[in-house]
Image: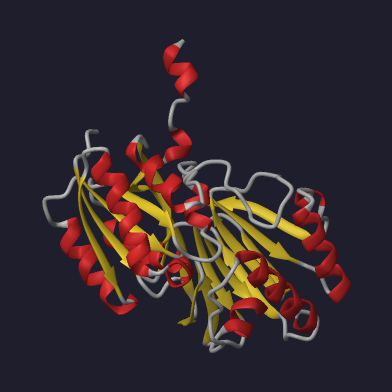
Length: 310
């Protein structure tokens, strides 16, 4: 696909935007895109105005829409762009930038912008929850409940990881477990847990704090349900994750699904985190995989120059 005209919508309240300064970000993007012949309309907006701007850009004359912000901003954009042929690009301007990392985006702004210039267009799966689309993961249990109502930290991802780890270590063993019932249409899983996650596709077993998905278009979700009971059990599980050995964790139930109904006994609502966005949702609810629902600019799929020359 030949791209010559793009709309770039930036959430000026996201972490990296606050650190670098909105106008500095605008300057880098204009120099990069204009320098390679792209016409770009760059809009720096507060978070509450992003969705309306995305809808106008989606229905406008641009060849592609590029969104800059954290994973919550990307999820909002995915909800708007899902089911449409116009591709979406992502600039890593948040804290963790899980979606950008999965797409193969460099985390330095100028390099990220340059990678979009040659990125191929590909279909990517989404997770749908209550009409909202998520690109990465949906989480239940103690962490979204703990974070609900707390002021979001906009800073370096290592600092946020350390804060999250400390909060988890202090609270996970004492947080009331959920009597979770999961039904994928063929089997039912019942368990008492303090943590469950539905990942879009699956994660690679790699060493590090930030997970990386093995593909974007597998057409399934991978469900992770913790059966740990003690604080040390959760800490040991986290260490297994960091060391890339989470599949060896015998207290973790893992299975694949394409549609999952979720119910919690004696609960009418629970806290849910979808791509960093935390809110309360009525029970029961469903998580549904939407295969290839989003067209994305994915640098991870670019053919290396050496291969092209060969």
